[in-house]
Length: 147
Image 1 (cartoon, helix red, strand yellow):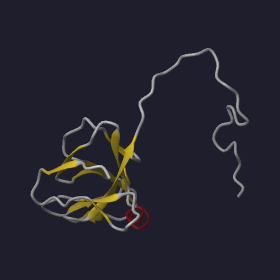
Image 2: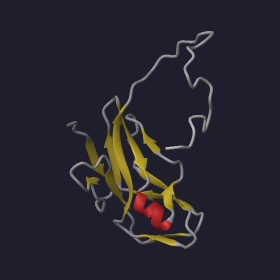
Image 3: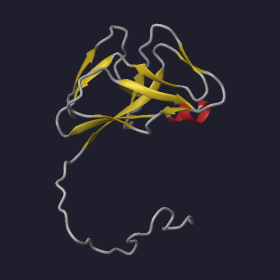
């Protein structure tokens, strides 16, 4: 296991935590003084009160919680948020209410997930052509919709 430094910028912040033994994501909690109401189609940054120091070669991905998305339409504005290893500011959750009703984000509510992943940097090797495959330039839906 890799150890990662974490700072509570706000003393009310709750450390991210895995909910089950084999969870890949840790829940992130809203660090709010008061409830925040999100109207339908409203976007907001929900603070976590936390900052992290990721080692080089790791990134943190902020992802939506499936239950909030299904039941209430609460999701992440940019799909998946990326926290790079050189970012040291507060983790903020960019949320949007895609539901039809206002949604109240309560202080301490589990609002998103944080997944830590390794990555590899690349160097582009510009060339005149690339190898063909069976799929080649077949685009969206080109592999069919069957089981």
